[in-house]
Length: 429
Figure 1 (cartoon, rainbow, N blue to C red):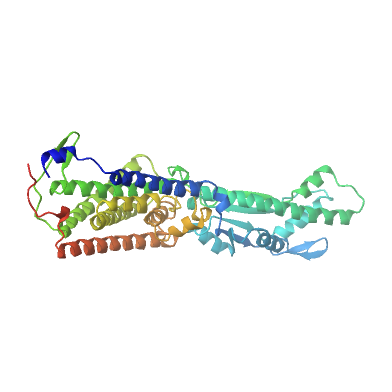
Figure 2: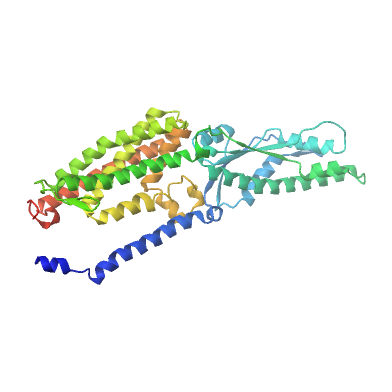
């Protein structure tokens, strides 16, 4: 091709259409993922885990044996839609264990003297004396997610309103049958209409410096961004240094003689830089978090896992670009960011997202990292709280990245497929 031809060459139509099409596809994917999971979380509820604890031992009401706690438990099972709520009837110790590990988003607790208090309340409606309302405790779990705790409160409020109405009607009928034509006072009628005191309290409240529970999500996000962006920067800078692409600085560019190096060795250099950079970046994040008074109870564990997560993302991202070239940029963007944030469960619980988004959490890297970071920040690093899953899935992702990169680059080298389709030589002046 002559210099004059090179100067007058124009882009054919297909080269215009390719980037425009990619932008349109990316816009459609972003809109579907991000608007689809934020539009109406409560509409998409499925398998939302709630513990139900019934400690009521029963008593005598209106001269007959009664177990109102059991009746309420049965009513909750009947009236709460099973396709939306996973209502787990467990003992108090098991409920506390599941709350501690973030396995449930809340618990409804009926105390052991519930029926007895209801009976006393009915008697006190016609006999003077001091009484205490029957109490049902609703425990939210803000450490498992702020929005999840709000959804738990909404569900409990709706369920307990219905329970209060049902128990109030039954109690009013029993009292009126017992006193005959004697009229009830207005205060007694009001008390019988809403007999249950529903107390909503957070279980193990979040400390200060957690951003109302969002600190785990944003810490996960910065780990992912530095790993993802770091991979792109390392890829470009190393390629420029080795002469595979020009180094550009504003309007200036510099061409370097192409180094006689294989694809596999080039990728090893990039991996090494990513491995060295990961603990440095993790230390920077940890230091900034501590300077900003972020609540970090296990800094060493957070530092070590952060370094692993950054390295795993960067190394896998570099491997994808080594295997797929320019297309690897789009693949990394979709896998790590576009699909990752909606399925992370960091802002909206998976049980409040469309099922097809929740299903992606089983393999999406960001969800695994979020589980581990949340466990470290809010659940004392317990393995059962997501630390085990996050750790092993991160290691599995790193292994996949290493395997993909090694296999692809060695296969290309063995076939003699030099980069840019040219032998190692200095670029023409």
